[in-house]
Image (cartoon, rainbow over all chains, first blue to last red; front, top):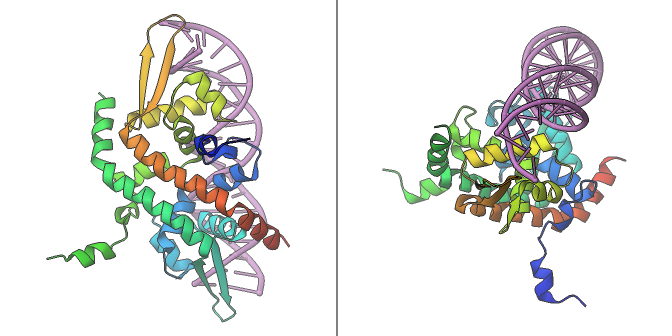
Length: 127
Length: 127
DNA sequence: CTGAATCCGCGGGGATACTG
DNA sequence: CAGTATCCCCGCGGATTCAG
């Protein structure tokens, strides 16, 4: 019998530890700079490919498509194609995507909050 | 005069958008697989280098040291060296590190929660 | 045991060109 | 405008070795 207390003692991302698990795979998809910046850029809005490219400064054409494909495949973004000419493609966060965005927001907030602290730590370290 | 409402309307990670900002730089340090897994592994505990290497499955010697250096430089982990022989080095999350861990926990929780959803989305996409 | 340094292969990722 | 394909190079990251 496993008590509630023991359950709570287990780290939440327990099977993220296994390098071969699906959880770890998904985590790797998501725990990377571009994916997170894209999710953050989308937020509650719907953006076209070209708009997204401007929003996420520094992202290349290739990286953007690549990450969008992965996010679409994992069901985090919805891709809507309007068969016009020239074509128009819109990207929107799905519900799981928006849920993840909440945690990304937290990470961004953390960055803001500790920026000075970190800068100081760096200066100390570099000396 | 900037109202509170207008402030709140700004995305939290506003200057994460600028590719050349310090915020973006820090974000890049932190928004990567190994760094996040290391932070998650540390949790509230203090771990030695060799223990950490076992905890974070699949991480190479080099990647572990490299990421630990970055995390130490940014002041997210504390590195304590015992000048014994053989040497003993312990790593612990600092206060900023623990604060970040909270958001990493959230990301791990998210992964768990939506795992099935994602798996289904993948199968759909691959068809 | 921890960590720095070196070597090196493979793939990430940029630039460009081409299709629809 | 959006996406795919091709080329190509730099640097990530693994393996190994040496030092403290």
